[in-house]
Length: 221
Ligand SMILES: C[S@@+](CC[C@H](N)C(=O)[O-])C[C@H]1O[C@@H](n2cnc3c(N)ncnc32)[C@H](O)[C@@H]1O
Image 1: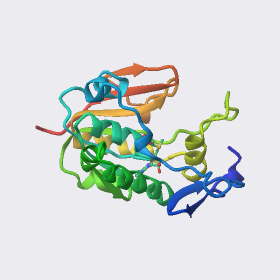
Image 2 (image 1 turned 90 degrees about the vertical axis):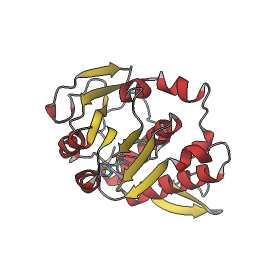
Image 3 (image 1 turned 120 degrees about the vertical axis):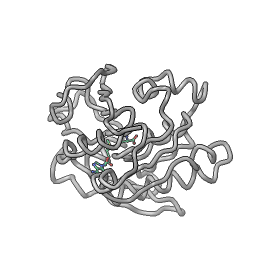
Image 4 (image 1 turned 45 degrees about the horizontal axis):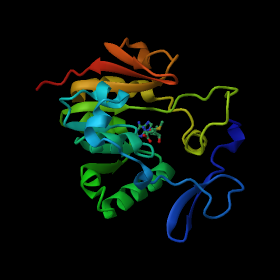
């Protein structure tokens, strides 16, 4: 990503819909997050069998998604039945996240799932430092982009890379997350990346592109 391209993306409203526009995007062509477009074949039990579901474990009932982004992982965990606190600090991303949450709340098919999600504006380090223990903490910070990507990344990834950049401070979240999690901390990483903070996970789920590192939580209970 050309560093000069950073922050040229702008938040705008078109026909009542908030969107994040890349330079040159026409109104209505910007990025929006819409959980209503997600298909959930097989529902919660199918999701529980997928990598994120296996990583959080079948006993998980509460979670903090400390790096919520556009909320797709938070939504997936809520669809598995968890109560989720979704924390996002970037104001542009937060606007899209809140809109996605509001739309899902108004959609009868998704309202029950959306009601399990609470969106928090702010930095996860403060939220985690003050939080009561939860079963699972998910960390999915931005990772520095490859210099020459093999293919153009999807628009959501381009937008996050442009408005958020690399989350250089993400290592500091790990000890806080370990203290708050009763069961597990799950860290999403590119498949060949070193573990966050150099801390070896207890186990990991390897995909083609991503890896889910799982560490045992340290909170009592
Ligand atoms: C890769 S995205 C997360 C994508 C998300 N898992 C999803 O399903 O859409 C990382 C997000 O975490 C946010 N973030 C990173 N560090 C944070 C922190 N300390 N507190 C709050 N948000 C943070 C960034 O602003 C960014 O939006």
